[in-house]
Amino acid sequence: MTRLETILEQTKALSPTEREQLLRHLSTQSCGQGPDDETAVGTRGLAAWTESTRGDDWSMFYPDGLHNGGRPRS
Image (cartoon, rainbow, N blue to C red; front, side, top):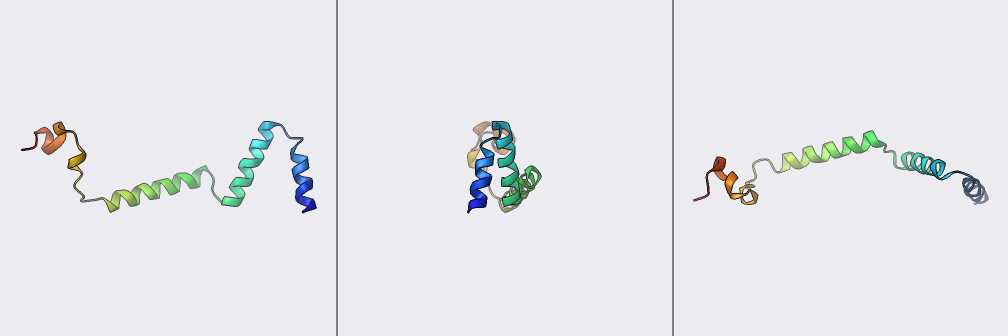
């Protein structure tokens, strides 16, 4: 634990910008995700959601003017 305490003591000498950079770097290392990974995860999630809702009837959520190609519901 003394090693960690030493490291934490050394971080007190860092500027706020350097601390933020350190935090980002440690987060990336521990989580294994960077901005590119987050984009890929979001893209896969959107693709999966789109595929899972394919064929669903969403017309009840459309404004009346958009039903049936713009014709009001009867």
